Length: 155
Image (cartoon, rainbow, N blue to C red; front, side):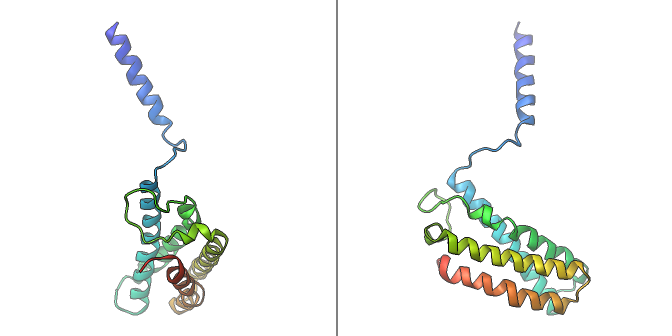
């Protein structure tokens, strides 16, 4: 009998493990960590992109992949900020509560940021030069980064 119960329990664990992709309600700390990860991915990619463009980093073969990586992370920003974590959890965050108080404005800025980053990815994927991509980043991405950080991030 015990052997049958053990087999049944192992089977339930294995079957349940296969269902891990089902949505699970995350707690505030997990939401905050996820948001920080997406922002770090984009920020780190952009720093590397600019170091390559400025000739400080000899990784020009990685340039297109970094632009696409930043674009992929940026596409997740609205989702990353969708959970209002203001005043919740113990994870440190620089996100101000005004993000969720002014969601329409904030999400509009994220839309512009994402559009600019997708334009940069389009430029690099269409064979645009490093200078072309950097021009898109300066005109359409960095200005939006600064806009949100000025208004919606603690210093």
